[in-house]
Picture 1 (cartoon, helix red, strand yellow):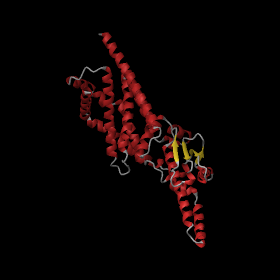
Picture 2: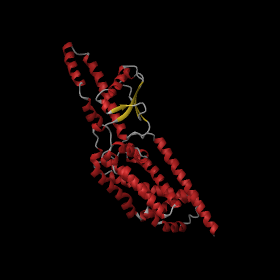
Picture 3: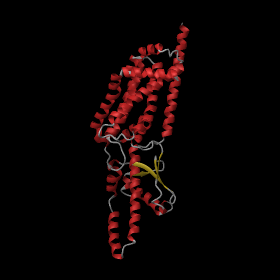
Picture 4: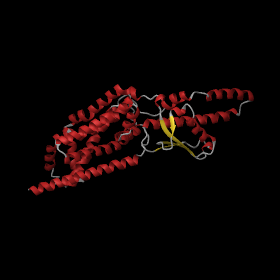
Length: 384
């Protein structure tokens, strides 16, 4: 433990020594990119009812009328223009047993499986909430009408009938879309900036430049020799913490932006550490396995992949099959979506699975790096 504390302390000293470079490359540059992309592409992310095409399924366990009414609502025009009922859909609305007898006490349940688009989940949640509230209002109005005299009841019924003929198109556009929780363009591209910071950390010029100096500093503090396992783990953890510091500084600075709600930024930190550790494990494996030219080539490939799938909204611009492919890539599903749900204050679908997958991948990469380093050291010992 003492070895690690000395190691991380001096790694942080080196970080502070190169702080201007770290600040420029890993903090200010991603922030500038986020703000510029939000400014130039903001209009593309604006929701419109005409763009809705959501697959969902309604599971009715209720024996009363209200569960059947909800199902019929999705099957009828104009809602059928926006929602497609499919049994294998990723978004499932469950009407619990006894719902019709206790509408004011039983919530409708929304289950997410697979990897639907976050915006679709939020629209469905908003629609269900509005439908539930409208149903409650109708029940309360019916109960209130019983206290009226015959003339008042007739006038009240006419007004209620007029209310029930409101075009659901207006409801979908003004309620389900406008009230659905969503990130604005600046918040969306802030997530892109955070991931970009972690990706460029794979090819850290500052880290490579201070490697020799760091080794000498470690020796002077008499915390060597370290075992290969200790060195691998200390490298990974200290570098991951440095990248976590960089992304945390981005969050702090961007929290002052007028278009950003930083209420849930603290909840993003565990996810950022998970992803920082994953990318640092990739970087360590590359350094132990490939020459510099190969490392640079792979880093460029990862950066370009991110630009086309996580930074530029090519899917929204091109639509159709291209949008479907680009919105379902692993970067969007397993890295960007958890941060999006977290910033909205929502629970992350399949969170435990995502954590387990990234933890397993990180451990696997570190074990391979350890094995590579051990073989390399054994080879050097054989030469001497």
